[in-house]
Image 1 (spheres, rainbow, N blue to C red):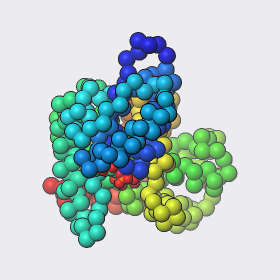
Image 2 (image 1 turned 60 degrees about the vertical axis):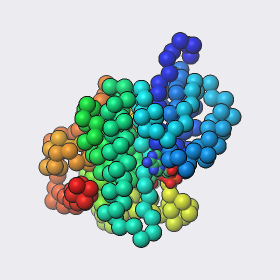
Image 3 (image 1 turned 90 degrees about the vertical axis):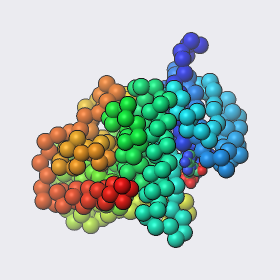
Image 4 (image 1 turned 135 degrees about the horizontal axis):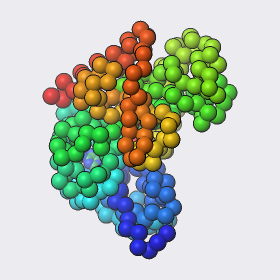
Length: 325
Ligand code: NAX
């Protein structure tokens, strides 16, 4: 590492929370930009979380990570977004007892409106933003609306955890390594309506559906298990996914920045009308990443089942959008 390499600024919200307790240490260790790239961490959380955040910062300091050049703790989005190269928006308002879904949506809309404005004003012009905090897709669309100077293609929300969960289920069933499977898609919302779609998946040049040969497993086990995996983790671990979610956040951002070398992955990005998804909805699509950007795979023929499943998750995204409006 050259002493003169300027650090990349990584902004992370919700930094005192449990997901970030996995994410921050991996970012500090170089898992996003590699072992030659110094980083500055800008950690945003609420005023009442600053003491806990201080404790996390003490632990990062105690790791003596060679790549960490500076750490900023703040409760002010304008400070957090200053000069950001990449942003992970993890913090959001969780649903409290008795809270209506509508109230949850509007509390989060307020958070992502303020953060969108700070992003617009303060971040580097080529900054990439990954929204993780739920409802992630709808939060990302609010962020975009409030950052008019940014290309919507600089914002995505996380569907990679669902994609990774689906990959593991498929590889177990097909008795192969996860890396051998290509062209898996997770469509739609990061919610139980998401659609994990194996229709185009390939293993060794063969259609995966011709290798697994069990359509009822696909419809009755695979799709619902991927959709309910987050709940299953909560029931089993007693807490929501944290390390796997942090891993997925890094996977999605790293692929976006470094490319997928022709392989497909799933990203939730603003629709430009693809597959009849209303323009502007942040929806999981199949993409290839190259040159720091992504390209939605176009022209796939969807059969009746795929159309019904996609329409169901898109209807939910429309409903969320309308609730926020
Ligand atoms: P925690 O409740 O442990 O942490 C959330 C943190 O965000 C807290 O420290 C809180 O103070 C902070 N926060 C709240 N409002 C904020 C604001 N306006 N500005 C800055 N910080 C704020 O939750 P955790 O388990 O870390 O999960 C974080 C988010 O990730 C949740 O919304 C969760 O639903 C979401 N997830 C999303 C996933 C995805 O695939 N998109 C999967 C994992 C995860 O469940």
